[in-house]
Length: 132
Image (cartoon, rainbow, N blue to C red; front, side):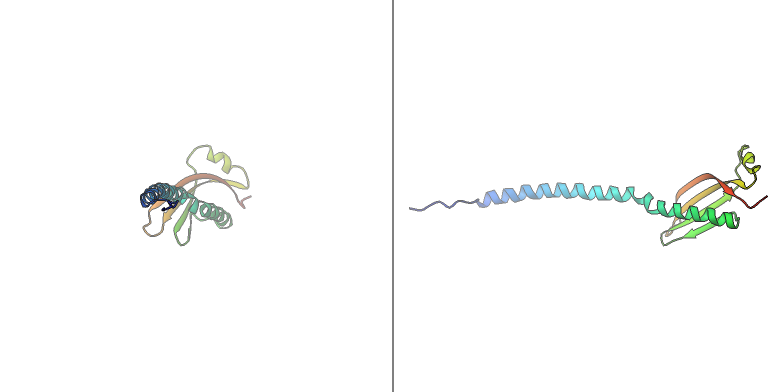
């Protein structure tokens, strides 16, 4: 008499592998989309920290030697800071206080390969001066 061996038949194994394959494709698709979205969301932070650094350096450079435009570059981006006088009437009130001056700083970030502007922000900043 023949004894029946316990195990899975070929059809059962093929069905299990097919289900596992379909589930894997769905999980990997979701994972790759998540990575894509994280990459897109982190684009501003890639130059954001560098922008903060160069902004601080531009303010220091302007305080030491006032120039209308200060420019920095790294491998990926160009950072330009334009220092100008604000156009609103209250700006003159700040300029009357000895030792400080109010400046309108326009920060621009350009993507280096094509020169496309990816960031522009106008900030009003009170700077110390050496005037008496």
